[in-house]
Length: 293
Image 1 (cartoon, rainbow, N blue to C red):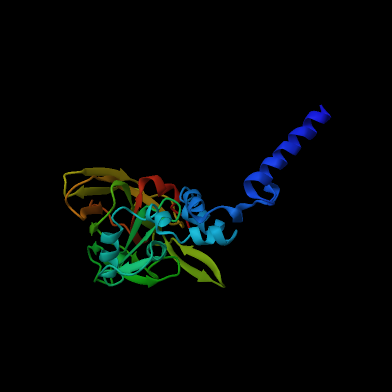
Image 2 (image 1 turned 90 degrees about the vertical axis):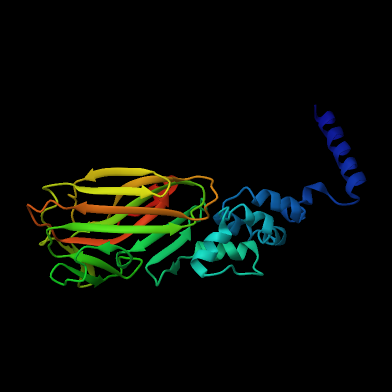
């Protein structure tokens, strides 16, 4: 057995020398792989993993800049998305630079909307601030006010003191890639603040939301419709309330138009003490990543 093992080792060593000269196979490492082969490997990784592997050696670092690697990580209609948020397509940039641009949070429409791509799935995510929504009574300080806060991507939220007719409407016209998306209202019962550096939430003005449910509705220009009702009961935390789902299919249209609303228009009672931060659109496969403050 020992003799056979020794002969086998000698045969392999001999073959190694004949194929690679005096180079010993045992000294080969990842750095000896051709960059084209490395590119094929990293192409199957997600963007976060690609950046980690680029630190291994020169071959992985070079492959991590290859356009063929990042082409598959970009949304299929990335040109339309970039033109929408930047007002034009940035020429002479490598695909990795385009991905880096989209993975950042980009503001558009006078700062009332922000868009980015999920770093794991490359799905397009969008957020609309309270100032980008149509809110009944928003200009009357008896009902609503805008409050600065560090708990919002937009640095402020709309706060409702009290109102009889509650209605919030919004509209999106955006080049979403093909897929299924979910819309959420980010709400909180109560008003957040700081007390000696600690987060507090004043819920003294919260009332009326446990009497009748609010109604969420969603429409798309191709005839999709969704409606649901929900009681707002949890106080002191930001909650993403699901308003509905829509599907973007292959079509000749480069952009998708969606309308949505949140209402509680039973005028037999008032309601108040509600903070409205934003409306967010996530790929349905990513909605589990929504954070709860």
